[in-house]
Image (tube, rainbow over all chains, first blue to last red):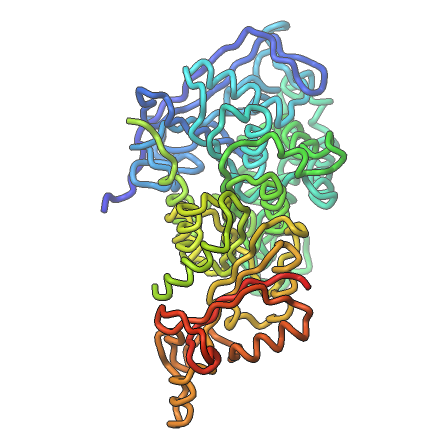
Length: 377
Length: 194
């Protein structure tokens, strides 16, 4: 057996588009850039491309490392590589940073070509559908007519699903992982708390904080802390931290006492140090807005009638933010439309974040499913 | 796997191109067979992760759902046939799942090992629980939770308003016409709503 390996040193690439992109909000982007990475080789038949869509804080950097930073392993490196479930010896894998992101694609912290200044709060609202439209243009640019597969977890799963509805003829397979056909009110509520934390930070300056030489780090930290709680399961948190006290006793203070507090503050600070607050705001709104059934009177089956792909839907038992029941809604709607669909409910303790981990059953199912996808030499 | 002959019986009852749901589909080999010989549009239901994985490897669409919780989410009358091959004896919610099968399917196909089979009776007479080709497990590691005979099953159908449209009984692949409750080790039924 070939040992799973890394795709090795990777280099991000940049594509500029000057054909205006109409957005769902009614606005449009006249000129935009997407940063992307690719792994493996596009075959002669150009039928082995797999697009990986990222979640809330993800990026184009899916696998491998950067030459100047050995710690810069891609966020789905355990999945993508030679001998891994998404095998780069067979597939040409594409990772792309979404519009509105903060890793080099056009977004709030990038320069607005029209003004020469950073976009800030002027960057338009972007939706899952807009992302897919932008990705489709990148796929055009790469000379790919039809994707062998599109895959994503969480918000990435929404993009994968949306691909099958917006461009049914361009997607052969879709893997929708730890996702949902739309957020619940509770989910939107968490997102709103996160946004309010950012919007109410005195350093936010209406989204134009770049010009003030500050970042709303406190708000972004709080937003991440709230989010982080919801990505873990109670069990995972209990196992990792329990009620462990840092000083071995209670101090009756608001300093860090419980280990979970320390962990959340650390994660929050770390995140606030590299992520952009405006991107967080835009991306959580994109999550909230996604609802393909809305235009069909809430009927998801009717909404998915356009899809012609073969599907894999995966959920995780302890994921309470995108629970298995939400994945089953997608499964039943696909079934109604007679779509080929497999559904795995992975018994993994880690909550929503399970989709990033390398649970053996999860990766075995993904590997077997990708094995099934036929590509020409 | 044994009892492939029940696959042939089931295939005879399935028309080409039907929508089929196979409950407790195992590694998906029955569905694969039906896809090949009847070009069915098939989905399996399997709660065992290893078997689900085997289905994916087999090119069979399988859904990981716990049958004990019924088939909520599946639409009434969506499937032409809902199959449960050699799994009914492993279900706790026997009556519930039979009702669900006939809710989501036009017809149900059920096969099960017959505990009234003469060799099983002989085994019990000799003081030991039966272990055979159709009941391959020891009493302490069997997945089976219901122990019933052809006569028991037909009484249950009668009681629950389930119409037996066809029954075929077998012993080691041979069709048994006389005294099936005594001479057959496996029975296959085509069921409908009365």
